[in-house]
Image (cartoon, rainbow, N blue to C red; front, side, top):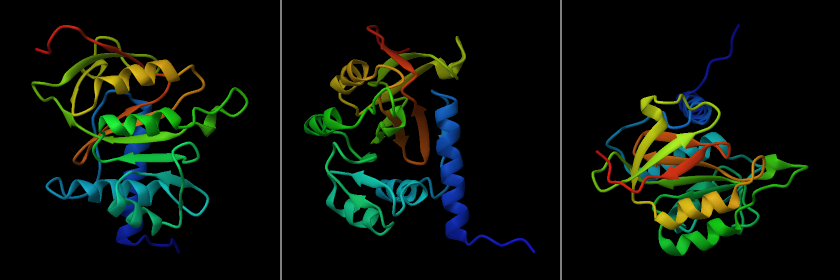
Length: 195
């Protein structure tokens, strides 16, 4: 007899699979389970439930989110020690914390952090970016993304800190939509406005 999943377990599994799919196809928008009109903090909590457990750690500057993530059993840590960073809104002052995020080392590159960032996709005022690297199909719609509500300095910081295989992986989250940017993906900011 096969064990059955609870609704919570099924949602966590679907969230986890969407996140893994997003990392394997950088630039492609994947859908997370849940209410598309729901509160955005709820999406970050759902991601926390899918990724965090007693053996992991997290950092977030948001007090309410921190309390909710603590219910997973994971430990809240400072930015340098946290395996997962959660930023429902990324402000310029948060870049100091991301600067401290672990990038692993040559012996243990898997110790690099994973960063979740709330943003918007396809906004007219957004920054256009060209993606390249493993999993990105050249000239495909996914090879070019448009993102707003992320400080430009974040992209410069990411380029400066990633020396593959060392670096951090990132997820861009817009409501129930997610784009994965593994450390192996090169992001080039486009100087011309998006069309």
